[in-house]
Amino acid sequence: MDFFDKTSKVVKEIGNVTKEQTELANLKIQKAAIEKKLESQYAEIGKRYVAYVADSFRTEQFDVSDVLEAINPDLEKMADLTEQISQKDLQVRQHSIEKDRKKAFDLLENEKRKLDRARDMDVITAEEYAEKLEKAQKKYDNFEILKKIQMQYEMDIITKEEYEEKVRNVLQ
Image (cartoon, rainbow, N blue to C red; front, side, top):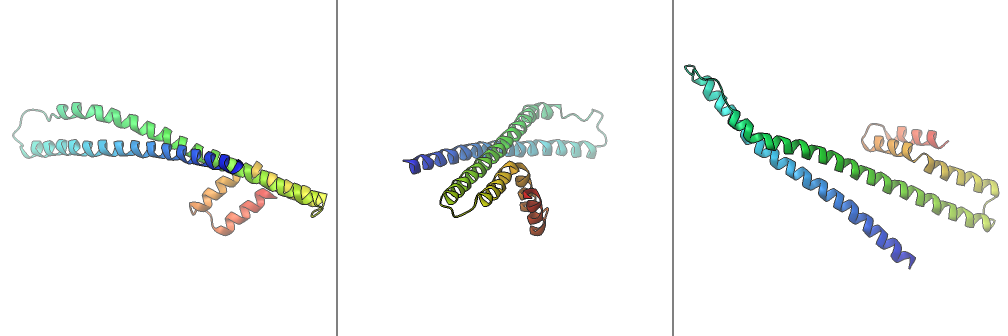
């Protein structure tokens, strides 16, 4: 039964991430559609300006207030979508970090069980047990720092050697 519980939990987590990512993608699609619509209206303003400048005998002022009035709702919607995208992106990132933190905790728990079993079977000494458990606990305790180091490496900000050195320094 434990296997089925774990499987359904993983499927539920994947569903949540997929839902959040789908919502984020939909917001970005809506924003792109509005940007496309605004481009044509900006082009209309440009065309009118070129015609205005080309006709040097005009006495009336350059007026595009009708176009500006028409695009105002789109600009407001764009600002709203930008805010929603920012919030949803943050939510997706936070969910990902929580998932990674949970995974790190599960790794710590698995390592502890393995060490407990090895100690109980006299495969390792109490000192070895304490040392290995402390190292595993330190890895979990420094999750945030290690996550940032990993992101630096994945973004090619640091080299593999720098990554390994930083991780070693944190875990010492």
